[in-house]
Each structure stands twice: as structure tokens, then as C-alpha cells.
Image (cartoon, rainbow, N blue to C red; front, side, top):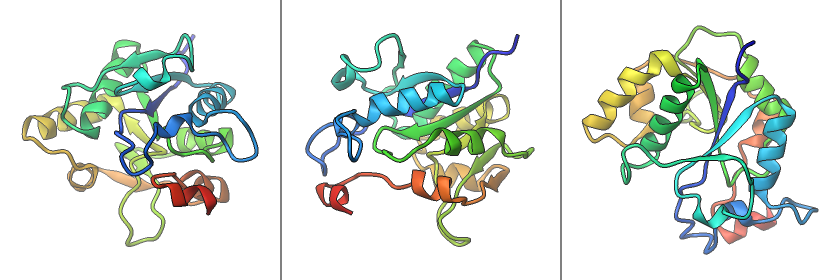
Length: 194
């Protein structure tokens, strides 16, 4: 039996602009925290979920969900991806989908689209427009083929997803209604009233 695909929820941001841990904010029209909703939606879509990064603010949420420290610590979001890829490989999963804890509108449908898009690219990632930057969250990563290029980028001190993406085979995830909605994130208090 195949292991369920891995959903890596990045929780390690400092939330300086928001002023509080973003994953604790409530889903619109609900009292459910974003992080709790994302874990639930990941399960509904058939994923095994892990939290990536400094998860202390979420100790009471997502009980039983494995927490992974950035690898190496303090090396930015690529270190979070590195930790998630290593866990995927260790648990015999060839791919993972990454999302962030500040994405309240990620749905099981959007997760399934990222997981199921047929492609041989190392990364399948959405873009808001053809000339826009690649979106590293709601992207699917080939754990086997990305492991070495990612480790090399980190060893050179790189922290940028865009720089990493420029050096590997990447394909666009179609911007369906579910994917476009899922890309909305909450970085600042004014985002909550959008």
C-alpha cells in the first residue's frame, strides 16, 4: 500500500506585520483557527500532514501532527522545504505539497489539483500571471529529484525560492478558481478585511 502524500504546512514565520501567529487567526465566518482548518482539509484530501518550522504557538492545535524543525535551523524557508523533503524521503513519499499557515482559503480541491496535476517537472507551482513570480506555497515538489539541488542551494547560503526555481525544471500549475482563491494569504491586519 502506498503512503499517503505529504502536506507540509509552513508555520515558522515571525508574524511581525500581523502581530500574532497567523495560523491562530480564525477562518472567515468561523471560530476555527486557520491551522486547524488546513490540517483538516489536508486529511479530507488524503494527505499526511506535518508542520514545518517553529510550531510552539500551535502546541494546542493539530495534536498528533508531526512537527519538523527547519534543516538547518535559521536558514530561512528553503531550510523548511529541506526538512520536509528529507521527511518525505524517509517515509517513502516521492512528492509533497507545501502550503503556509496564513492561507485560509486552501481547499481540499486546490490541494488535489496541486497533487494530481500531470507533469514530469521537479516542481509544479502556480503563478498569478505569466510574468509573475512562482508561488512556492501550494506547489508540488519532487522529493527525490529536488533533494540534491536544494541541499546545494542551502550550502551556498541561498534563501530564495525564486533563485532555486530558476535553476530547476518547473511547470505552472493551472490557475483554476480553487487555486487562485487558495493563494490568498494574510500577512498584515488589513488583509483580514479584504
